[in-house]
Image (cartoon, rainbow, N blue to C red):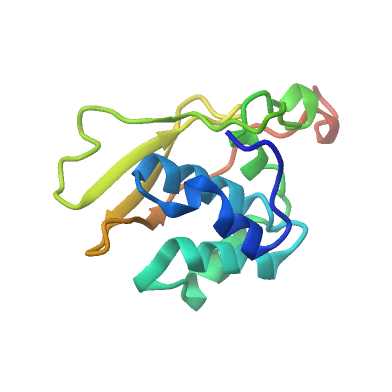
Length: 158
């Protein structure tokens, strides 16, 4: 749960979840980072770079994110509670993200596969974290930018 959106990398890193002590924290911080892309790409990249830790954010990942945002800036907002097509993916406050696990979430040692519910998708989307020597859970891979239902305001048939 986030009471407000951090507007700088310093404020982002100061959030309790930014300590990445659990894979749940890292998964939620990933959604928060991606939600900045439409307004501030560099801030989004800085946040993701921080979450990626030792592996860093490479050019192919930046290109992938850019391609997914071409006309769907609402996708990351859909992961906040209350954000659904009917309200143009406007999240309720405080900003809350539901992250869950399943029996297979920890089947590979040192990795955690968690799931985040989207208000525009029928099934939760996957985020994979990896635990480093420092004990923190870093973002390894995310599958959060797949297509979802369009907001009603952009759908002439809704």
